[in-house]
Length: 321
Image (cartoon, rainbow, N blue to C red; front, side, top):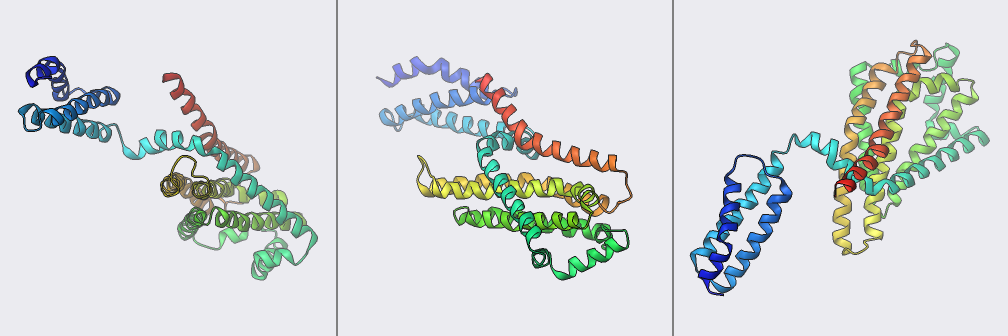
């Protein structure tokens, strides 16, 4: 096709698109992308048959403007943090809920192991929790203040220390996923056995309810998010073991990125858990109903954000497609 005929055939389309690009009104990304695809196809044709022409230069400039418009629209679509937590992450996490379930089951199994071991071996609790902690707690029980350990440290120091430590555990569970998920399972096992033996210790001393109503004020979020961090590690492990249609390297890179997004999603929850442990858990005199309300809200928040909301978003998106 002669260049003049090519221009005549597509001129109106190019001019209309150029007008849309200069329009200050925000265009739908899908519309810009569709136009951009057409322009790049025309540019490819022009480069092949009219490489040094003004038409090719014009189309190249138009393609660059379209690319910049797409990028600008992405940047202007709202607060990046809000968009990540409210939309991008939940939609992505929907595809990894199987790993979340596996992480939960691993944790539950080893909590049972911790309970069983503590029930059948009196020395097991001391081996897991340490003699110093066990002796201190027994003394606190005798003083009718079994949860006094949460009152020893300053509120702010405890908040910061606990939050940083919990984030460290989460990062460890995630990063050890590089060992085909085995390292992640080990971190989950450690924390689960400790929890199981810890709760059995209070049960054996007639303090199960007192310990549960106090510890789970912060522990509901803290333990849940450790399980979610375990999910991040299992995502990395799965990407290594089961690359599916990707090359193993590409699958691994995607797994690392998605796992990191999962860990980043947990940080606000860890901050809340640290705040509760530092400032609220120590209020052992609070009525049972208030402790139950805090625990219930914490559990609902976790289940809503990591289970229900991703399913809901993907159903909405599938209906719109």
